[in-house]
Image (cartoon, rainbow, N blue to C red; front, top):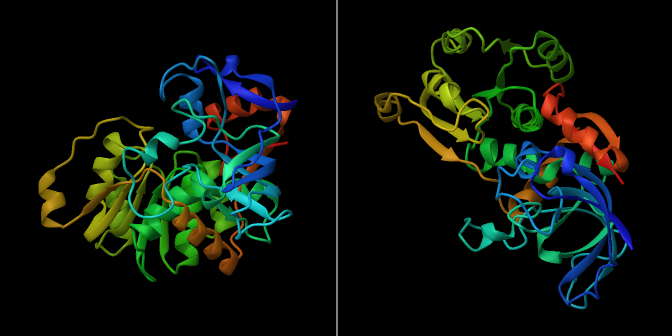
Length: 338
Protein backbone atom coordinates (compact mmCIF):
# COMPACT_ATOMS: atom_id res chain seq x y z
CA UNK A 1 0.00 0.00 0.00
CA UNK A 2 1.06 3.61 -0.60
CA UNK A 3 0.14 6.81 1.24
CA UNK A 4 -1.98 9.63 -0.16
CA UNK A 5 -4.12 12.55 1.00
CA UNK A 6 -7.73 12.69 -0.17
CA UNK A 7 -10.51 15.27 -0.26
CA UNK A 8 -14.27 14.74 -0.27
CA UNK A 9 -15.08 18.37 -1.05
CA UNK A 10 -16.65 18.97 2.35
CA UNK A 11 -14.05 21.22 3.95
CA UNK A 12 -10.36 21.52 4.71
CA UNK A 13 -10.75 19.65 7.99
CA UNK A 14 -12.11 16.69 6.03
CA UNK A 15 -8.85 16.25 4.16
CA UNK A 16 -7.49 12.92 5.29
CA UNK A 17 -4.56 10.55 4.79
CA UNK A 18 -5.53 7.37 2.96
CA UNK A 19 -3.75 4.19 1.95
CA UNK A 20 -4.05 3.26 -1.70
CA UNK A 21 -3.09 0.07 -3.53
CA UNK A 22 0.11 0.02 -5.57
CA UNK A 23 -0.43 1.42 -9.10
CA UNK A 24 -1.54 -1.18 -11.67
CA UNK A 25 0.70 -2.44 -14.46
CA UNK A 26 1.77 0.21 -16.96
CA UNK A 27 0.03 0.61 -20.25
CA UNK A 28 2.22 1.24 -23.31
CA UNK A 29 2.06 5.05 -23.01
CA UNK A 30 2.17 5.42 -19.23
CA UNK A 31 4.94 6.38 -16.83
CA UNK A 32 5.25 5.30 -13.19
CA UNK A 33 6.30 8.26 -11.06
CA UNK A 34 7.59 8.54 -7.52
CA UNK A 35 6.26 11.88 -6.27
CA UNK A 36 8.75 14.10 -4.45
CA UNK A 37 6.89 17.39 -3.92
CA UNK A 38 3.42 18.87 -4.44
CA UNK A 39 2.56 22.58 -4.50
CA UNK A 40 -0.75 24.15 -3.52
CA UNK A 41 -2.99 26.51 -5.46
CA UNK A 42 -6.07 28.58 -4.63
CA UNK A 43 -8.02 26.09 -6.72
CA UNK A 44 -7.13 23.34 -4.22
CA UNK A 45 -8.98 25.32 -1.54
CA UNK A 46 -12.05 25.50 -3.79
CA UNK A 47 -11.92 21.75 -4.41
CA UNK A 48 -11.58 20.96 -0.70
CA UNK A 49 -14.55 23.22 0.12
CA UNK A 50 -16.80 21.74 -2.57
CA UNK A 51 -16.77 24.94 -4.61
CA UNK A 52 -15.16 23.27 -7.62
CA UNK A 53 -17.24 20.33 -8.78
CA UNK A 54 -19.02 19.73 -5.48
CA UNK A 55 -18.54 16.86 -3.04
CA UNK A 56 -16.85 13.59 -4.02
CA UNK A 57 -17.97 10.10 -3.05
CA UNK A 58 -15.64 8.33 -2.88
CA UNK A 59 -13.06 11.01 -2.07
CA UNK A 60 -10.39 11.82 -4.66
CA UNK A 61 -6.64 12.24 -4.22
CA UNK A 62 -5.96 15.95 -3.69
CA UNK A 63 -3.87 18.50 -5.60
CA UNK A 64 -2.79 19.06 -9.20
CA UNK A 65 0.92 20.01 -9.20
CA UNK A 66 3.84 17.69 -8.60
CA UNK A 67 7.46 16.97 -9.31
CA UNK A 68 8.92 13.49 -9.18
CA UNK A 69 11.20 10.84 -10.55
CA UNK A 70 10.41 8.37 -13.32
CA UNK A 71 10.54 4.80 -11.99
CA UNK A 72 9.34 2.90 -15.04
CA UNK A 73 8.07 3.61 -18.56
CA UNK A 74 5.63 1.89 -20.90
CA UNK A 75 6.86 0.19 -24.06
CA UNK A 76 5.89 3.10 -26.34
CA UNK A 77 7.54 5.83 -24.24
CA UNK A 78 10.69 7.15 -25.90
CA UNK A 79 11.11 10.66 -24.49
CA UNK A 80 11.52 9.64 -20.84
CA UNK A 81 13.58 7.05 -18.98
CA UNK A 82 13.91 5.83 -15.38
CA UNK A 83 15.66 8.45 -13.25
CA UNK A 84 14.37 11.46 -15.19
CA UNK A 85 12.97 14.30 -13.08
CA UNK A 86 9.55 15.38 -14.33
CA UNK A 87 6.65 17.76 -13.72
CA UNK A 88 3.08 17.15 -14.82
CA UNK A 89 0.64 19.03 -16.95
CA UNK A 90 -2.60 19.28 -14.97
CA UNK A 91 -4.58 17.99 -17.98
CA UNK A 92 -4.09 14.45 -19.24
CA UNK A 93 -4.99 15.25 -22.85
CA UNK A 94 -4.40 18.99 -23.43
CA UNK A 95 -1.10 18.47 -25.19
CA UNK A 96 -1.20 21.49 -27.52
CA UNK A 97 -3.62 23.87 -29.23
CA UNK A 98 -6.92 25.02 -27.74
CA UNK A 99 -8.91 23.78 -24.78
CA UNK A 100 -12.19 21.97 -25.49
CA UNK A 101 -15.02 20.28 -23.60
CA UNK A 102 -13.33 16.88 -23.77
CA UNK A 103 -9.86 17.94 -22.56
CA UNK A 104 -11.23 19.91 -19.60
CA UNK A 105 -12.73 16.76 -18.08
CA UNK A 106 -9.23 15.44 -17.37
CA UNK A 107 -8.19 18.22 -14.98
CA UNK A 108 -6.45 16.28 -12.22
CA UNK A 109 -7.23 16.94 -8.57
CA UNK A 110 -10.78 18.11 -9.27
CA UNK A 111 -13.96 17.30 -11.21
CA UNK A 112 -13.76 13.78 -9.78
CA UNK A 113 -10.29 13.05 -11.21
CA UNK A 114 -7.61 11.83 -8.79
CA UNK A 115 -4.80 14.27 -8.10
CA UNK A 116 -1.12 13.90 -7.30
CA UNK A 117 -0.74 14.04 -3.49
CA UNK A 118 0.28 10.39 -3.41
CA UNK A 119 3.59 8.53 -3.15
CA UNK A 120 3.44 6.87 -6.58
CA UNK A 121 1.07 7.01 -9.52
CA UNK A 122 0.73 6.39 -13.24
CA UNK A 123 0.57 9.31 -15.67
CA UNK A 124 0.36 9.53 -19.47
CA UNK A 125 3.85 10.23 -20.81
CA UNK A 126 2.73 12.94 -23.31
CA UNK A 127 1.43 15.02 -20.36
CA UNK A 128 4.83 15.11 -18.60
CA UNK A 129 7.68 17.58 -19.02
CA UNK A 130 11.30 17.28 -17.92
CA UNK A 131 11.90 19.44 -14.85
CA UNK A 132 14.55 22.17 -15.18
CA UNK A 133 17.77 20.55 -13.98
CA UNK A 134 18.83 23.40 -11.71
CA UNK A 135 15.59 23.33 -9.71
CA UNK A 136 14.94 21.38 -6.53
CA UNK A 137 11.90 19.12 -6.52
CA UNK A 138 10.14 21.69 -4.32
CA UNK A 139 10.80 24.43 -6.89
CA UNK A 140 9.86 22.25 -9.85
CA UNK A 141 6.47 21.40 -8.35
CA UNK A 142 5.41 25.06 -8.58
CA UNK A 143 5.41 25.27 -12.38
CA UNK A 144 2.34 23.19 -13.24
CA UNK A 145 -0.42 25.70 -12.43
CA UNK A 146 1.02 28.91 -10.95
CA UNK A 147 3.99 29.08 -13.27
CA UNK A 148 2.06 28.04 -16.36
CA UNK A 149 -0.89 30.35 -15.65
CA UNK A 150 1.50 33.28 -15.35
CA UNK A 151 3.32 32.17 -18.51
CA UNK A 152 0.04 32.01 -20.43
CA UNK A 153 -0.98 35.51 -19.31
CA UNK A 154 2.41 37.15 -19.84
CA UNK A 155 3.88 35.29 -22.83
CA UNK A 156 1.51 32.90 -24.64
CA UNK A 157 -1.37 35.37 -24.90
CA UNK A 158 0.03 38.58 -23.37
CA UNK A 159 3.01 38.48 -25.74
CA UNK A 160 4.90 40.96 -23.59
CA UNK A 161 7.76 42.73 -25.35
CA UNK A 162 11.01 44.19 -23.99
CA UNK A 163 10.39 47.69 -22.67
CA UNK A 164 6.64 47.24 -22.21
CA UNK A 165 4.86 47.75 -18.90
CA UNK A 166 3.18 44.88 -17.04
CA UNK A 167 0.73 45.29 -14.16
CA UNK A 168 0.19 42.44 -11.71
CA UNK A 169 -1.92 42.28 -8.55
CA UNK A 170 -0.92 40.70 -5.25
CA UNK A 171 1.99 38.55 -4.13
CA UNK A 172 0.62 35.03 -4.55
CA UNK A 173 2.15 32.28 -6.66
CA UNK A 174 0.81 33.39 -10.06
CA UNK A 175 1.61 37.05 -9.43
CA UNK A 176 5.20 36.40 -8.36
CA UNK A 177 5.79 34.13 -11.36
CA UNK A 178 4.26 36.72 -13.70
CA UNK A 179 6.58 39.41 -12.38
CA UNK A 180 9.64 37.15 -12.68
CA UNK A 181 8.78 36.05 -16.22
CA UNK A 182 8.12 39.63 -17.35
CA UNK A 183 11.37 40.92 -15.85
CA UNK A 184 13.37 38.17 -17.54
CA UNK A 185 11.59 38.99 -20.82
CA UNK A 186 12.79 42.60 -20.54
CA UNK A 187 9.52 44.20 -19.42
CA UNK A 188 8.95 46.72 -16.61
CA UNK A 189 6.68 45.68 -13.75
CA UNK A 190 4.18 47.46 -11.52
CA UNK A 191 2.76 45.40 -8.65
CA UNK A 192 -0.18 46.22 -6.39
CA UNK A 193 -0.52 45.02 -2.80
CA UNK A 194 -2.09 46.35 0.41
CA UNK A 195 0.55 44.70 2.59
CA UNK A 196 3.56 46.97 3.07
CA UNK A 197 5.72 44.19 4.53
CA UNK A 198 5.08 41.94 1.55
CA UNK A 199 5.67 44.83 -0.82
CA UNK A 200 9.02 45.58 0.76
CA UNK A 201 10.13 41.94 0.57
CA UNK A 202 9.14 41.66 -3.09
CA UNK A 203 10.89 44.92 -3.89
CA UNK A 204 14.10 43.69 -2.27
CA UNK A 205 14.06 40.17 -3.72
CA UNK A 206 12.78 40.80 -7.24
CA UNK A 207 13.94 44.37 -7.75
CA UNK A 208 10.49 45.67 -8.69
CA UNK A 209 10.71 49.46 -8.46
CA UNK A 210 7.01 50.29 -8.54
CA UNK A 211 4.78 48.79 -5.86
CA UNK A 212 1.52 50.60 -5.09
CA UNK A 213 -1.28 50.10 -2.57
CA UNK A 214 -4.53 49.01 -4.19
CA UNK A 215 -6.49 50.28 -1.17
CA UNK A 216 -5.99 53.71 -2.72
CA UNK A 217 -8.92 53.78 -5.14
CA UNK A 218 -7.00 56.04 -7.49
CA UNK A 219 -4.25 53.51 -8.09
CA UNK A 220 -4.98 53.52 -11.87
CA UNK A 221 -3.97 57.19 -11.78
CA UNK A 222 -0.72 56.24 -10.05
CA UNK A 223 -0.08 53.63 -12.74
CA UNK A 224 -0.55 56.25 -15.44
CA UNK A 225 1.86 58.60 -13.66
CA UNK A 226 4.50 55.88 -13.48
CA UNK A 227 4.09 55.13 -17.20
CA UNK A 228 4.24 58.82 -18.22
CA UNK A 229 0.53 58.90 -18.94
CA UNK A 230 0.49 55.96 -21.36
CA UNK A 231 -0.76 53.12 -19.15
CA UNK A 232 0.33 49.48 -19.03
CA UNK A 233 0.58 47.11 -21.98
CA UNK A 234 -0.12 43.80 -20.23
CA UNK A 235 -2.20 43.05 -17.12
CA UNK A 236 -2.26 39.85 -15.07
CA UNK A 237 -5.56 40.21 -13.20
CA UNK A 238 -6.08 37.62 -10.48
CA UNK A 239 -8.95 39.42 -8.74
CA UNK A 240 -11.79 40.23 -11.15
CA UNK A 241 -14.58 42.44 -9.80
CA UNK A 242 -13.79 46.12 -9.29
CA UNK A 243 -10.08 45.36 -9.61
CA UNK A 244 -10.56 44.32 -13.23
CA UNK A 245 -12.57 47.49 -13.93
CA UNK A 246 -9.72 49.59 -12.54
CA UNK A 247 -7.12 47.55 -14.43
CA UNK A 248 -8.87 48.56 -17.65
CA UNK A 249 -8.59 52.22 -16.63
CA UNK A 250 -4.84 51.72 -16.19
CA UNK A 251 -4.33 50.31 -19.70
CA UNK A 252 -2.46 51.67 -22.69
CA UNK A 253 -3.82 51.38 -26.23
CA UNK A 254 -3.79 47.78 -27.52
CA UNK A 255 -3.23 46.42 -24.01
CA UNK A 256 -3.69 42.71 -23.31
CA UNK A 257 -5.40 41.62 -20.08
CA UNK A 258 -5.16 38.07 -18.77
CA UNK A 259 -8.27 37.46 -16.64
CA UNK A 260 -7.31 34.74 -14.18
CA UNK A 261 -8.99 34.95 -10.80
CA UNK A 262 -12.06 35.94 -8.82
CA UNK A 263 -10.55 36.97 -5.49
CA UNK A 264 -12.39 40.32 -5.64
CA UNK A 265 -15.66 39.20 -7.25
CA UNK A 266 -17.03 36.84 -9.91
CA UNK A 267 -18.54 39.72 -11.90
CA UNK A 268 -17.16 43.06 -13.04
CA UNK A 269 -18.73 46.30 -14.24
CA UNK A 270 -16.57 48.36 -16.57
CA UNK A 271 -16.99 50.79 -19.45
CA UNK A 272 -17.07 48.98 -22.78
CA UNK A 273 -16.24 52.31 -24.42
CA UNK A 274 -12.77 52.15 -22.83
CA UNK A 275 -12.22 48.62 -24.12
CA UNK A 276 -13.41 49.52 -27.62
CA UNK A 277 -11.64 52.83 -28.10
CA UNK A 278 -8.36 51.60 -26.69
CA UNK A 279 -8.63 48.25 -28.50
CA UNK A 280 -8.01 46.35 -25.28
CA UNK A 281 -8.02 42.54 -25.43
CA UNK A 282 -9.44 40.53 -22.52
CA UNK A 283 -8.40 36.89 -22.46
CA UNK A 284 -9.64 34.34 -19.96
CA UNK A 285 -6.69 32.27 -18.73
CA UNK A 286 -7.52 28.74 -17.64
CA UNK A 287 -4.12 27.13 -17.60
CA UNK A 288 -2.39 26.05 -20.83
CA UNK A 289 -1.20 22.99 -22.70
CA UNK A 290 1.70 20.61 -22.08
CA UNK A 291 3.48 22.25 -25.02
CA UNK A 292 3.36 25.61 -23.23
CA UNK A 293 4.46 24.03 -19.94
CA UNK A 294 7.53 22.74 -21.74
CA UNK A 295 8.16 26.23 -23.16
CA UNK A 296 7.97 27.66 -19.62
CA UNK A 297 10.39 25.04 -18.28
CA UNK A 298 12.91 25.81 -21.02
CA UNK A 299 12.50 29.59 -20.42
CA UNK A 300 13.23 28.99 -16.72
CA UNK A 301 16.35 27.02 -17.64
CA UNK A 302 17.57 29.78 -19.93
CA UNK A 303 17.14 32.48 -17.29
CA UNK A 304 17.74 30.33 -14.18
CA UNK A 305 14.47 31.69 -12.80
CA UNK A 306 14.14 30.83 -9.07
CA UNK A 307 10.57 29.99 -7.97
CA UNK A 308 9.66 31.75 -4.73
CA UNK A 309 8.71 29.18 -2.07
CA UNK A 310 7.27 30.70 1.08
CA UNK A 311 6.98 27.57 3.21
CA UNK A 312 7.51 23.81 3.00
CA UNK A 313 5.22 21.43 4.88
CA UNK A 314 5.70 17.72 5.42
CA UNK A 315 3.09 15.27 4.16
CA UNK A 316 1.46 14.71 7.56
CA UNK A 317 0.96 18.48 7.87
CA UNK A 318 -1.17 18.77 4.73
CA UNK A 319 -4.18 20.26 6.52
CA UNK A 320 -1.93 22.90 8.10
CA UNK A 321 -0.55 23.69 4.63
CA UNK A 322 -4.09 24.27 3.30
CA UNK A 323 -4.95 26.50 6.24
CA UNK A 324 -1.79 28.52 5.73
CA UNK A 325 -2.77 29.00 2.08
CA UNK A 326 -6.24 30.08 3.16
CA UNK A 327 -4.75 32.67 5.54
CA UNK A 328 -3.13 34.51 2.59
CA UNK A 329 -0.07 35.22 4.72
CA UNK A 330 2.27 33.72 2.14
CA UNK A 331 4.30 35.18 -0.70
CA UNK A 332 4.77 32.94 -3.72
CA UNK A 333 4.17 29.22 -3.27
CA UNK A 334 3.40 26.70 -0.53
CA UNK A 335 4.81 23.21 -1.02
CA UNK A 336 4.21 19.78 0.56
CA UNK A 337 7.14 17.38 0.60
CA UNK A 338 6.74 13.61 0.34
